[in-house]
Amino acid sequence: EAQVTQNPRYLITVTGKKLTVTCSQNMNHEYMSWYRQDPGLGLRQIYYSMNVEVTDKGDVPEGYKVSRKEKRNFPLILESPSPNQTSLYFCASSFWASGLIAPSGANVLTFGAGSRLTVL
Amino acid sequence: QKEVEQDPGPLSVPEGAIVSLNCTYSNSAFQYFMWYRQYSRKGPELLMYTYSSGNKEDGRFTAQVDKSSKYISLFIRDSQPSDSATYLCAMSRGGGADGLTFGKGTHLIIQP
Image 1: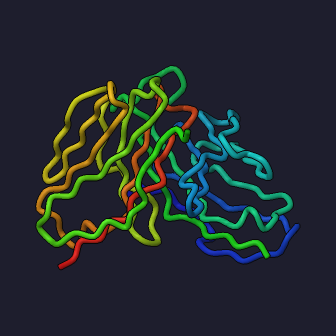
Image 2: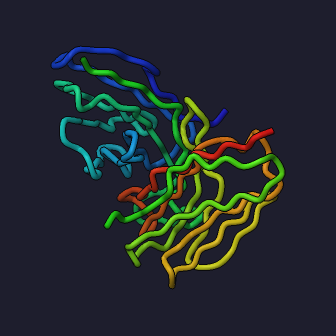
């Protein structure tokens, strides 16, 4: 089954304790992205990656790191989590590739099921 | 002014009704318009997408884009309880490598 898999799905941690949320896709997608979803603010992009070893900041990158060493994986790293990073996180991927137009003409995203993070 | 405005609802309608969901936007550079559906405790899933102005129909769903008014709509005909979800509009300028801009979502409830 084509999917984006995130782990963990739920996590409660404390301020300052480094954590990593993993994301893996099995669709051979070039493009991967992280979003956070907060009540009243909607979905906002944190980081994205157009290909292996190519990453770029989204709208709200502060306090996060990412890496793209393999095409299928795109982990989100919180080096020193703070309470304002309590949120619902989504990883997403799409066919879109740098320099090419996706078949649909649009960057249509496939989302994971989400990871609910609470930082105390 | 926020880039994308969407009424959060909740919007509650009886089963079988026609539902109209809407978003307005301010950035005239947006060219691709999408509607995602998000069930509780799930990730958003693509429902429909359109390019530029016009209509697109898929079963009970119709998406409309009016770029001159910066207004997009999603219509659901013969609504079913299984349509109860949050509906997110999303837009992008080009291929969207720099990401989609989402509305905050409208929570829709279809009453049996």
